Image 1 (cartoon, helix red, strand yellow):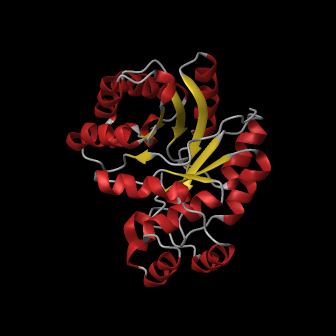
Image 2 (cartoon, helix red, strand yellow):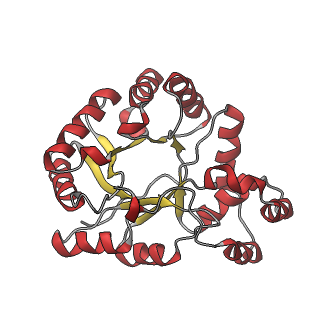
Length: 266
């Protein structure tokens, strides 16, 4: 698969956004300029995302939606059914990016799932085939056995987990990099060293970290719970960081995960 896909630099992540809050939050996000929305079958808020998009009056081509198949939806038939359920909930004819949420290596279904997703792409139900939480060895297996790679790999990435080796592989093989948990699920907000760096560039800690992600050609899908936070995150796209700040950011890497290691989630 040739990767001609370029994701939006910043989108809205809907992980753990309550269903009852989702439609209003997405409507606010649309109002302030967001056009990329990241959801998944197990988030429980696809219906509300779809309602917000439908009521926006925006042309379908003007926004991007990502969804993902959960662990118990893997396999050839499982992926077909999961995608159709997601499309029904979203009220869409196709999804812009569809992902295997976790490789679940012990289930040994991610290769068959990926192969089926390529077929669903040919049918026009998926525009771009991606994956989430894939290590290099899982990507290499797709390349060996199918001869194709995803256009995008969405993984945990923040100052404490910088994923340099994985992202080097992405760059070498034309895979776009996207960070979930780009603010380490809020943990970075209590880091005084990061706060000091942010102060030097006249930004909040969140803006500093998001701008650092974007400076590495990594797209981000931070969660937000208010219009104020939506605007704060969005403004990070206009923040250019000095080289010395980028160098100092490298020092925070300590291979620390806020979520599970993909090898262990089955």
